[in-house]
Structure formats: C-alpha cells, structure tokens
Image (tube, rainbow, N blue to C red):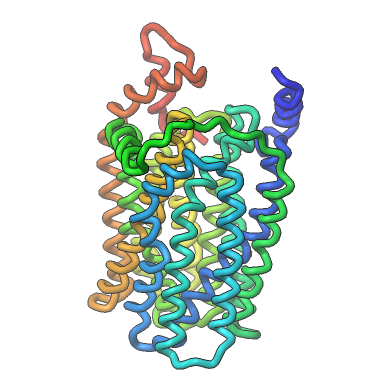
Length: 450
C-alpha cells in the first residue's frame, strides 16, 4: 500500500460516514461543486419561473419545450460523448465544460436583464437551454467517470458517489430557496448572474487538483465503432441493461413533475415564487436524506432491493402530490419524491460504477446520462403536452402509476440479475467466493434493513 493510500485509509477510518473526503482531490471537487451547484439550482428554478411569468396561458406547453431543449442534446450526443470521454483526459474536459457553463449562465443573465419582446426572450432562453444541454452531454459522463480518479481506494467509490449526490441535493435545498427570495426581490436575472460567478469555484478546485495522467488507449478507431462497442457492452449485459431501463422509465414518466412545479405552485396551491422555492426545497430535503443514507452504507450489497423500494416511494409520492391541494401536505410528499428519486438514481450509479469495465466506464456512464437526463426532455415535452389536455395534476398522477409498474417489473427480474452480478462482486473482493453461493445470493437480495 502506497503512502497516499495509507493516508487515505487512515482518513477513511476516522470519517466512516464521509470516507471519500479523506482524499485531497475529492475534497477539492466536493468544495467547488458545493458552491457551483447552489448556483445551478438557482438557475433551474429561475428559468422555469421566467418562462412561466412570460408565457401566461401557454406556460404548460412552453415549460415542457424548455425542459426538452435543455436535455435532449444529452439523449443524442451522450453515446458519442462517452466514447470520447474514454479517450480524453477527463480532468481537462471538465475544466472546459465548466468554463462553457459559466459563459452560458452569463448570457442568460444578459437576456433576463434586457428589455425585449416576450417571444424573443423565450426563444433566446430555449436556445441557451440547448447550449447548456450540449455542455451537459459531455460534462455528465466525464464527471461520473472522473469520480473513480478522485479516490485512491476503490472501496471508497460508493461513498464518493453518495456524497456527491448528497452535495447536489443539499444545493437543491439551498438554491431554490435563495432563488425564490431573489426573484421576489430583484428578478430572475440576478439568479443567472450568481450562477455564472459560482462556476469560478469549481474551476479553481479543478485547477488545484494533482491528477496523475490516465493511461489511455492509443488505438485510433472510428468513433462510431467505439459507440457500437459500448452499446453492445451496456445492453448485452442484463444487469446494466435493466438498471438503465428502469432509470429511463423513471426519468421519462416521473421526473417531468419538475417542469410542472410552477403550475402547482400558482394554480393548485395559490402561491408564487416563494411557494415554488419551498416545493423544490422540500424535494431537496428528501434527496439530501437519501444521499446521506447511502453515504452511511459501507457496501454495494443489497442495493438492488433498495432501488425497487426507492422507486415505489417515488411513485407513491408523485401520486399523493398530484392529489394534494394543500401546501402543508404537498411539502412532505415532495420530501418523499426527492428521497425516492435520489436513492434510485444514486444506487443505480453506484452499481454501474462498481461492475463496469474501466475502459468502457465513460461509455456506460454516457448511457446512464442518456437514461437519466436524455429521457427527461422527451418526458418534459410529453408532460407539457399532456398537462395542456388533462391538467398538471393528472399528468403527475399518470407518471406515479407508471413508476410503480416499473418497480414491480424490475423486482420480478431481480433474482436473475443477482446471479449475473455475483461473480463480478466476488472477483472484486466485495463478496467472498463461497462454494454453495447461498450467502452471496442472500446478501444481494436481502430486504432493506437500514
């Protein structure tokens, strides 16, 4: 064991709940992200509110269009981006994406501050949302694949993923609340300006890291061949395929509730931007709790059943929220929604990062991005159109029912997936090889206890 690994191990022993923070590069990443993500969540809420305020009666459809525009590039570009991420220096790629994101938020601030026709402003917001989507198509697989380079001890990777998810959703708790207050006091433009400045923190953190050059293949194959190889690998292996399909369903049918929140805040709950901030913040509380729960776990074992349970909680929360007309009831239901989505998403990420081959990590995480972010725009467009016909509450109700159905189907396939994953866990030393295999089966499929 090297001196760096020994130091990390000692730090992990001291901080069992936050083991990944024993690694210097991860601490820098965590600190920079903590500041930047607050600005990101401010921009997300402010963008939806700006469109809602300007669009008036057409807000449901246009909120769906903006959500679609901001995330659809991930669906189409993620496989190519993942192939390139497997070839590029991931550290350098992240610095570039953060600089571009700073530029995009700055342009949003200019648009919000300028006095233009409503149609022109909305068109520019849609165009800049597409630009951010292009950035995210490369940023997310690079960010997820880069996590493994930030911790010297592989056993700390699940904790790093959980802490990163907790950070994102902790910011989700703070950012929308600040955005709701800032919008009420000064307007949406200042939210975008704060977001632009916040990117300086993560850029500085990335530049301060000491990252060893990663060994990359010198083989210059066409990109399309790399994409095809990644597709065969991801969708030819049942555990990876089923995890991605469940996440895609949840993203398409469940996550579009976020673009409809302004309608719930004003038309259902008779509130305003502060109500919207409270709803988003409540979801962030649940997501933060889910992330902290996963961070407290020391093993990847048992995450399969927890994915099922989390999806059920998410679906039940959506159904309850769609039927609620009182803020006091909607807020705890939003906590359940955030908790369920967080655990499902982060557990999927953890299992995939654990079982994937290193030379295909970027591509698999690009499919993860495609399932999580790439399906969301189609869901947003579908939800916006459906909400215009049957209303936002019925649309969210349908999404919750679909998530429950997906959880049931995944649960029925879990025993077969367990058999496929068990040899990988044994090879990695996560699960001791036992002749009978009974203990391995019990560990992977045991019901949630904590």
